[in-house]
Amino acid sequence: MKATAFYRFWWVGALVGTILCVGCFGKSQSSRFYALSAMEHTAAGSLSDSPARDAAIGIGPIKIADYLDRSKIVTRTGDNRLELAEYDQWAGSFEDNLTQVMADNIGFMVPTERISLYPWPTSLPIDYQVVLDIVRCDGRQNEDILLVARWRVLKGEGKEILAVRRSNITEPVDGPGYEALVAAQSRALAALSREIVKTIHAASRESSPLKSGG
Image 1 (cartoon, rainbow, N blue to C red):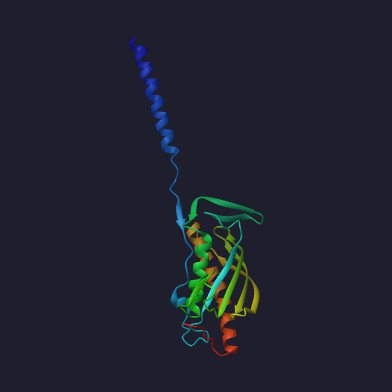
Image 2 (cartoon, rainbow, N blue to C red):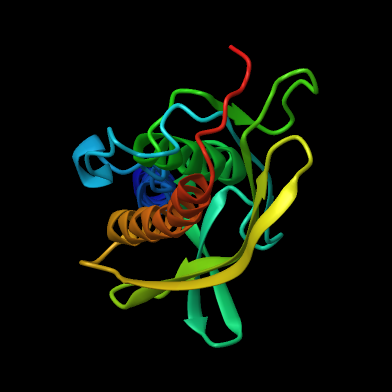
């Protein structure tokens, strides 16, 4: 009888131990969150004599490729194959984050504090409008990321088209992990911002500085 009781308790103990072990090994990892970053003011350069200084600039609309607009970070494992990170996610909306980074970069380099995000009030005068279509912004870990964007710069209330461009920007991923990948994406957005600001500066040099209300 005692032997039977012993084996019964041994079996229960083994079952409880197994359940605890499964619980330990099955415990999910904590999610990690990332955000794109704007360029440092020093990287933007000193542009106090810029002909477009203090111009009113509207950023948007910005369209993001559907496959990018999700919470989990997307990487590329082949030319036609994408992979979603299991635990590495954007800290909020990728579209909102990218829009704000572009606004900060362009504002640093023009330079101006008069930056408006689409949609802005129709009564608000805009000197230059930047319209963006982000076709691709992904890459392979430990390799490169590729940013492909179609963009336009429009001038004034009449929305005269100053430029229609397509940018293909490659940035190396300087290290393992998603943090290095996101840093490379941020540098690619900084390079795109420089291309856009060059167009705004060129337009400003060809005409007298624009004056908007305010």
